[in-house]
Image (cartoon, rainbow, N blue to C red; front, side, top):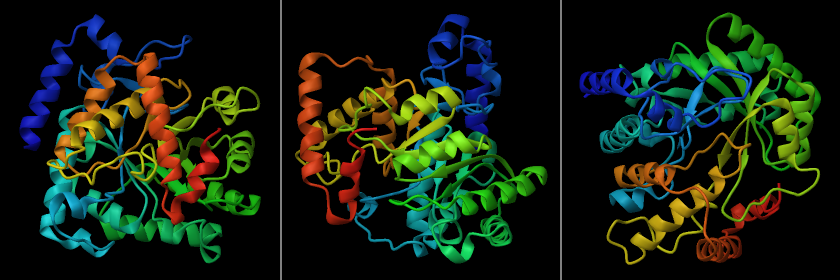
Amino acid sequence: MPGNEMNRRDFLRTTAGGALAALALGKARADEPPPDTSKIRSYNENMEYRRLGKTDMWVSAVCLGGHWKRLNVAQGTQWDMPAEAAQDSFLANRSDVVSACIDHGINYVDACSSGEILAYAKVLKNRRDSMYFGFSWYERELRYPEWCTKDKLLQGFDDGLRECGLDYVDLWRCTGLMTEPQPDEHVEALIEAFDVVRQQGKARYLGISSHHHPFLKHAIETWPELSVILFPYTAASKELPEESLFDTIREKKVGVFGIKPFASNSIFKGDSQPDNPSAKEDDELARLTLRYILGNDAITAPIPGLISVHQVENVALAVRERRELDLPEQARLRSAGERALANLPPDYAWLRDWEWV
């Protein structure tokens, strides 16, 4: 498989015409030339690519979120995190999904827990250069007070790399506190730790994930070392007309990965099984959601968790579909977004705070 995949990429790189390549490159700034498509990982002429903020990484317009929610439903097997990373049937599923992503030009995976890192490091072995790797061993990061010093952050990062067998990661996308601001001294410690691993060649760029609007605005205004931020953006989310977080994002040219695009799956009516009665409708809602999110030029890419090859194919189709929603589609998505917010499980009620960004 890896050998065949490389041949396919080489073929696409040498045969894609200039006009086709221009269509696939979504967010080159006016003051810079478009990138050499041969340097985009897993480049596919049918995928759109966007520059990730100030980095030199051009990522697919939809990327792979690390979570695998409802995977047990789709596969008929229950896995518990992080022990599932050692199970052959689970790894076979993750390998199939990653292979489908690569085949469709999806070139970034966001791994934000020990289980996710262990799983994706395994299935990307021998094809590490096919996808950019976002790394957050959150159990040893800023969410826990005992890990908030430079030395402890370095220890957690180095231990994580060693345990999963990675030499480096493209983005250390550290997981911060969820619904409260991170103290400045903690972020300063992270910046100092990142400077060490960057000089050692173990991480190329730094990002941070948070669910707290004011903190994210403060962070990207204060620390230029932060190239990427991650926060929720769903079908029900909208940009504030004034004093939006997106104003600061555009000013600072920061990359954005939108997490929870499907509102913890609350937007869907079915259970992700291919033969469930709502499967077709749910596929359409997923594509409508992604088309809507991609219409915001400040979001680099939404990163849904994908549990099957079919779901990979569906999100890739969303990128190729017409971007603007017509009036019936807008009404349908608005209704679905309202239903999703109303049906959020208690542990995801905080997503209602991200209706306006």
